[in-house]
Length: 127
Image 1 (cartoon, helix red, strand yellow):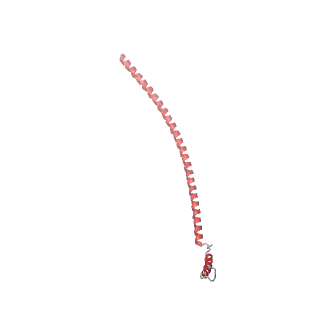
Image 2 (image 1 turned 135 degrees about the vertical axis):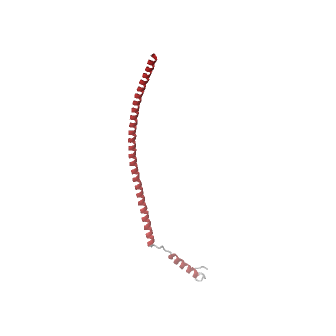
Image 3 (image 1 turned 30 degrees about the horizontal axis):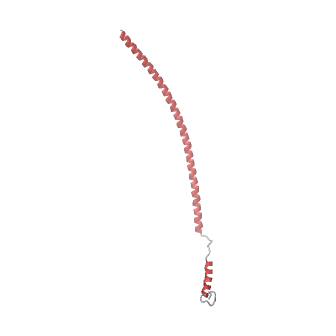
């Protein structure tokens, strides 16, 4: 005996199952509408991301500008230091030359004094 046979005791149940299975399958559907809050949060998220991106670019540009300013200042400071070093080297060389001249003068005077003293000692011994 087949369940499709109208005389079968479960025939009515199988019709009911078939009808409700079709109805349950058709009860499923996708809701294609979106809520205003979902749209608002998506737009808000997009605005936040764009503003973070713009502020990030702004910060990077500001850092690059600061680095360029520091580079220029460093070059200027280096140039000034180099000029100062050159001046100091010239002054040092002039001072060394002056001191060498003074030492030569002192040496000459000492030599004369020693020669005079030796002459005086020799003259004193002769008398």
